[in-house]
Image (tube, rainbow, N blue to C red; front, side):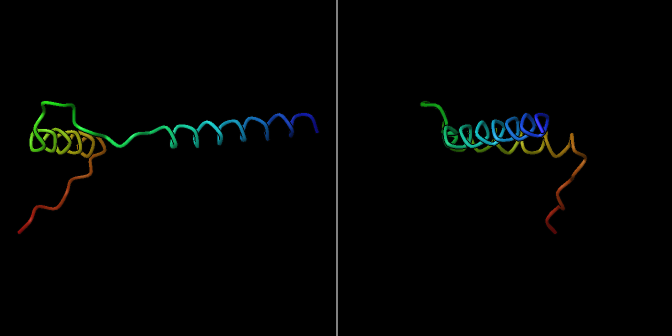
Length: 62
C-alpha cells in the first residue's frame, strides 16, 4: 500500500508542476525593435525545422 501512495504522490506532483508551468507560460511576444514580419518569418522557419526533423512535410499549394 505504501508503494501505491508514493506513486500517487508522484503523479499528483507531476500534474501540479504541469499546471503551474501552463499558468506561468506567457504568450510569445516579439522583443521590442523586431518587426512583426521578421518575427513571423523566424516562427515559420522554426516550424519548418521541426517538421523536417519529424519528417513531416506540408503539402505544397497547387
